[in-house]
Amino acid sequence: MFVMNQERIHTGNTDSLMLISALRAHIPLLMQKHETTGLNVAVADNGELVWEAGFGLADIATNRPMLPDSVYHSGSLGKTYTATAVMILVDRGIVALDDPINRHLPFEVHNSLGEREITVRDLMVHASGLGSDCAASNWAPGHSLAADLAREYASEWSSMHGGSRIRRWINKVGTTWTYSNLGTATLGLIVESANPEGLSFSEFVQRYIMDPLRMTHSCYPPAQHPDLVPAELWKLTTSGYSRIGHVDIPTIPLYFREYPAGGVLAKPADHIRLLLAMLGEGQLDGYRLFAPYTARMMLTPAAEFGHIKNALGNPIGQQGLIWRLNDWDKDWASFDHSGGHMYGWRTQGRAWLHYSAAIMVAANQWSLPNDAMVVEEVTEFTGTWLRFRRTPVNVPLSAKTLSYVRGALLAGAYRVTVGISGQFPDDAVQELVTGARDRGGDWDAEAFRRGFEAVGKLPGTLEMMQGFWGSADSEVDPATAHRAYLAFGGKRSMDYLSHLLPAVATGGSSGT
Image 1: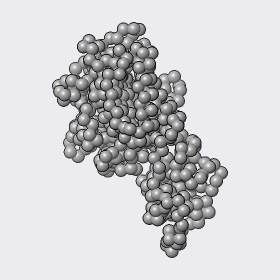
Image 2 (image 1 turned 90 degrees about the vertical axis):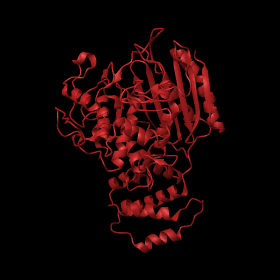
Image 3 (image 1 turned 180 degrees about the vertical axis):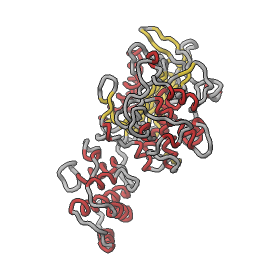
Image 4 (image 1 turned 135 degrees about the vertical axis):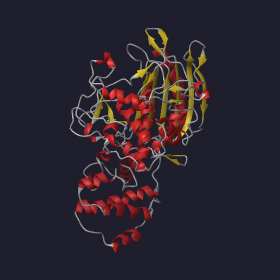
């Protein structure tokens, strides 16, 4: 039952093949440990898909095997597509993160606890003040997203726990992190209401994310129902099971009223393409979802919340724009999102920022009363392997990137450390460019000039300099600036340049 049925290998790289071999041996052991019905997985390494595989059963009654192309029900993993759709509109200037959500909704939403309007950003970082909810569901499809969400907001209580335990609003706006399905579903309604083409949420995601990223076995329907899903795709969907003790019980079909919070159908190798696009700062195989700065915004920690915690009070990472950020000050920094479709599927997709690697795992089982988190164990095993394998995978920084950071740091040293105000003399900047001697083959004069001039325009404050790397004015993100800094021989503390970098750039160990 826990055997591998089919695999596809897309690489000849020795390191990647070693990782594949380790996963091929380890996954059946984890499935046996948790009595997992079926699991399929896709892995990317060095920025490319390297492996797909299916283990166990996609359906117990028919003995149908789980295959690489078997299609999972995403659960909350689907939130990453909703966030991506929002950021496409942000990148186009149609929506702004600090817009009040009522500017883009067909009805008004107000947090009864105050003290200000809810913004798009508040929803993206789970800080609207909404209480917990469970993606309120129906037994039948065919409901209006706008009407269903308006009905939810009109209720004083979440439908969870009998509808009398969790209030709709539990905190003031912007004060506390509380994971909210309703909040993310509201983002989906904003996409539907604000896009100028008048597309439904599902149509927008298909047209601007799934189709151009060549996600051939994916859709985001208003309900995961055969009438609303392409027939060929529906044939590949897996059956979900809840295991209670040693009994696997089929999942009753249900349909999320708040479907933008978790309604994707896909195969693992398709979700890998979204993860690779995020690793590529919004671009994959020539298609760009949004500008690099927009991608970096999605993966910037919401500083006001620090490390978010689970229900047990244990830290589980930092909050980006929907994405969860893990070990963000380390060389093994990763971003991910998990999902669960009640009570039948568990999913997780994770990408490691500095390893150019990613994994997507889906299991058609949600165990009760205590969930066996086999997908997380596969993901953690992969992360450990990447972190400690003999040959680290760090894509070399280009001469363009290194030179840009050189220029920015040098201008910062003059502007901030020395405290020189006013415009840099043009002839002095030109002398820096023409007089430089390259002893390592990683010099790009024009990139150096751009970095120097970008920082040279800033006021001479440390806060402005540290914030530069995460702004639209910078051509590189904070993590890349950190890698370049280490490549220059930086020691991360008490040297002449460390204070010019953001906090994320001064922690962790060198991976270069």
